[in-house]
Image 1 (cartoon, one colour):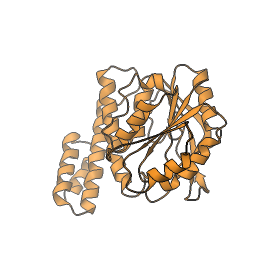
Image 2 (cartoon, rainbow, N blue to C red):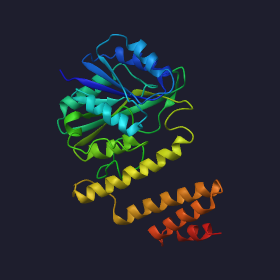
Image 3 (tube, rainbow, N blue to C red):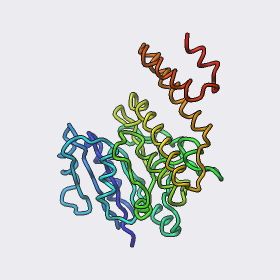
Image 4 (cartoon, rainbow, N blue to C red):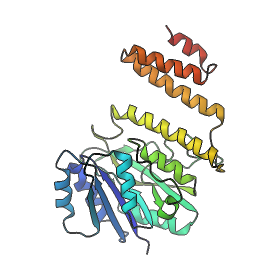
Length: 296
């Protein structure tokens, strides 16, 4: 019977962990473990989490001595996992009772599958449903996750540990978009399956990693992950849909223009000139009219 490792990277979200915990212990699939790594939380997360899990040996708690960031902590979660299949669960979110059983079944039936992803729903602070998430879909034929557009792969994403070990693993340097980087790597070593079923409950609150100012930070790290995926596939001659040279120049130019727009809005004149110049140098003829207007 396959062991499933639920991976939880926590930073200051202990107050929400009760609902996360409750969703785990009612899973219809019973052979699981939970790896929790706290990233030097500054609130009372450690005390709250330890009190909730008690002496249940299925929950294994670890703590970083100092704050290391999302990439480092999630990398550590995987390295500590003993399961055949792994899946990340944020401490402020929750699973549907059949989430693990549905995922395990797909992985058991398809040895070539490296990662399985599903649909999700948005919930409020009290776990009341707001609406179904508007992302999550099968990747179009002939495309890859990298080139099919954002949002195709979302929670709940689970991956085979043996396939993960064929990759470079989670980039410990990354502060945001860690899951996106993982998805790019996993599709390079196996098949992607989308399960058209809501299995994950994503809580919306002010401290969410995708909320407010964090959205801009996530944009940078998503760009970083995409560029690295492009380079990796070119260097390793991976036979999977990848960007063309022109597409990568468009991606870079658009990214630099978004940085320019933000700097302009914040009246950071030197910064905005720098990113406008980067956008022009990267692809001079692309969107030239807009770039020229931006000079004034």
